[in-house]
Length: 401
Length: 97
Image 1 (cartoon, each protein chain N blue to C red):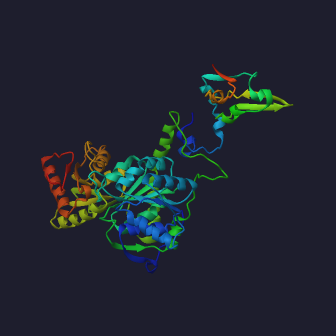
Image 2: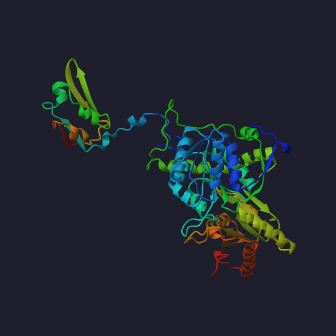
Image 3: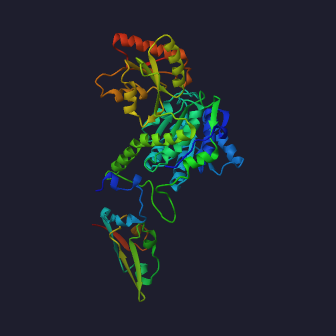
């Protein structure tokens, strides 16, 4: 582990930045070697800003303007295979077009940082936020981290490289922000000096890389005799993420005083009902909790940051004392019993003898606004279901029906 | 067979050129049989199309003391029949194993 020191406040630069701009600046400071991307709303500013840094000679990064997202991720895999530090950005349909290569990146163990401005999937075509895109990719083998603020997007992008490139991990990672709600909203961001990030990250030390002097083959054929064993390796690697995440965050905290955890609890100690969500709705939920607390309602928030790997033990530990957990998620898994986040939460609680009731609310599809009243509605419904001792498996909130 | 933690990460082949350890001759259903009478290589050391086209380097054309020989490397010859197809004098016939 490198030794990092606390960075004095006067060395920090404070700026008003959108989530996208914060990520672009983080990528610049992480001194990436290659960025291959294809523009798509609401991620566009990340690549646009980064291209400006390239045009101004502020970075030495090779930018590959590709013809599609399938090619973008393919180029990233190639560059990462050589040993480069690589990033890309996408959203929605772009992520969908990367699909095949997402699995290649993960199973070839390429530590690529993919920043995603979460956006609804077609059809109907929609540019606004929900989580259908990255939730769909939850089984691809990528690590998934979701951010609530521009500051967190900046910090997480920097930490993402250190987690992904760790020799015990070597997996690609998605850093997700809510499209428009965070990607285009200006917030205060405290930025580290370049030198501090250089020291924190160091230069990528590839474990195995393509090198003409020491030729190896990557991504060859493995059939019935060995494929399963390579998947076992991959599974072991993603299980090691929580430990490495904690180490990296501890180091980052020493440097900045900031840390987020795999999950964040807000007023949950004595809470009877816990609102469980992530990304920007978590901020809304915290405000709702503050108001409800003034009315002596025992309510708290669990804000998840890491969705893959899912920190089951920690989530169960944080919510097991509650009477009910109300899950709010911006995705409908069509035909499924309930939806991706609630499924994980319920499975995490399965082994407990006494478990809280879980209610699952689908909110904000296609960027439908999630005002505090939607969260309150979910809370009130959960209270009612507790009284009845029974809740539906899931329901939608904020839709005209 | 090796366990998951005894094999290179992600299926990487870290020893270059190790495909020669994979003897593909076992795939062969038909083997090439040469007719020395009409083969241009045997007659005058020309042609060599079978050698050029063989995808597995399984045809060996040998020249020794002004005489011309050939052999097939049956460890790798898959019996694809490309040599027989390319031979301009129909000197190679594919016969069932």
